[in-house]
Picture (cartoon, rainbow, N blue to C red):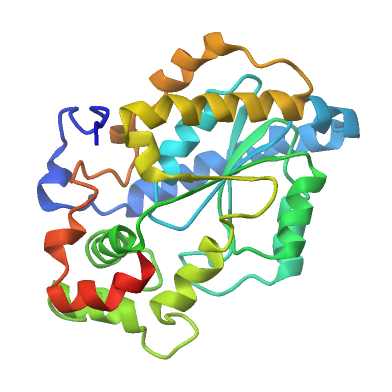
Length: 288
């Protein structure tokens, strides 16, 4: 498969270890910046009308965690009229890893401003789907091979995400193979269920009406990428009630800068083939 050369930029030292550097200070800075932007976001919501959402659809980049959220956010932010306030809606906030109920998720969706681009890790429910559709939102769901997600998740939790509620659990679990087994089986707690229970509610978005489900690999494949970007442009224009502008395609292409993500490692996205043991690969074959 022909791939775009998005992994060829000079790698920072964090890439040499196969995982991003610890994010404690950087995460705090990002959260502080996002908090400051909530003031203009609140004003935008106060001024919003139904016509505002009709002409400026919000863009929700939803994903199975560790599946290319930042890559898709870069594309979404390049769409015409898109505004970034630094907001993010997580079903399970990583700092606490407790499950937000439907009322909490619906309330957060209701605060999305017209034209806003935001990331999300949301479980698939009818209520969530309806809440997003009621805002005329462009719902982009990005996902990738769960085996690749698993490797990224384990490396992220064990090596860098010190503020994450599960960091200590994985960091102290032993070697990488033992950490992977923990991620597959879970530990029987509500905080760390098995891989099927963790991934399934996100992957259920595939095939949902009014959701553009996009495989991460489609953005790496030269032939498929253009079609994906064109489809996003067309859907966004359709929701905004205007004709799509093909001249914006290069703008979306130029926005793809994976090395700008704080979780970027520059590693082969199919490294799971040599990071997982043969036994682990067999156990996960059903997820492929």
